[in-house]
Length: 302
Image 1 (cartoon, rainbow, N blue to C red):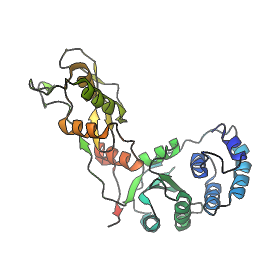
Image 2 (image 1 turned 135 degrees about the horizontal axis):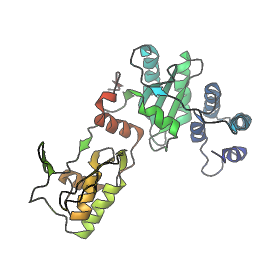
Image 3 (image 1 turned 90 degrees about the horizontal axis):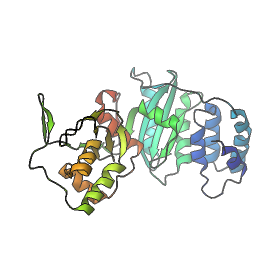
Image 4 (image 1 turned 120 degrees about the vertical axis):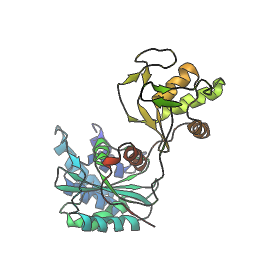
C-alpha cells in the first residue's frame, strides 16, 4: 500500500492497473460510505472522478493505524429478509458463484461475493450495493475466484455464513496416510504397503504434495514409524480443494518411498501440481475439517 498513491496519480489505463482490486485493498481502511460511492463511480466508468476521490482520500490515510475488526457469524435470524434480497441480486448477476455474510464488530453487516474470473466485478458490486441499501453504507465485497485477497477479506470469510452457491458444494476427500490404527498401538503401515520406486513418478508426487495450500498448521511432530525417530514427522494438513492430505504422506514418500493414498496419488499424477484454491474451495475444506463452524441457511440456485 505504500506506493498506492503514486499508482493512483498515474492514468488509470496503465499496464496491470486494476482499479477494482485497488478498491478491495482499501476495504476496512477507507470509510464505508466513501468506498460504496467509489465503487459505483467505477462501475459507471467515470475514471476521472474516481482518480479525484482516491487522490483526496489517500493523504487522510497516511500514518493512520490499520483498524483491527472482529468478524462473527450471525445466527439469530435478524438479517433473514435483507440477506434474501442480497442473495436474489447476487443470483441474478452474471458470473457469480457464491455469497457470504458476516457481522463486523457486531453491528455492521458485510457481504462477500465470489465471481468467476473475467466477470464484470464493478457491475456486480453496484447491483448488490443498491439492494443492500437497507444499510446506510452498504458493505459489499466482490472478488474473482483467483483474486489474492487482502487480509481484511480473508479474516471476514473465516467468520462468514455461506448464504448461497451456484453449484452444490462438492465433496472434499480425505487421504489416508496409514494403513490402519488402534487405540493401543496407534497408527501403522502394512508390511505389504506399496513403494514408489520410480524416481520420476516419486518426484511428481512429491511436487504435488508440497504444492497444496496449508489448511491446518501445527508444530506437532510424530514419531517416524519406520526409523523410530521421535518428533520427525510433520502433521500439518494441505489441500487443493478436492483432496486433503497430511504432510506425513509426503514425509514417508520422501524418506521411505511409501506410497500415498492410491486415489490421491492418481489425482496428483493427473493434476501435476495442486490447483490454487478459491475462497469457496477454502470454505468447503474448512467446513469439512470444522463442521461446527458452518452455521446458517444455504440458499442455492437450482
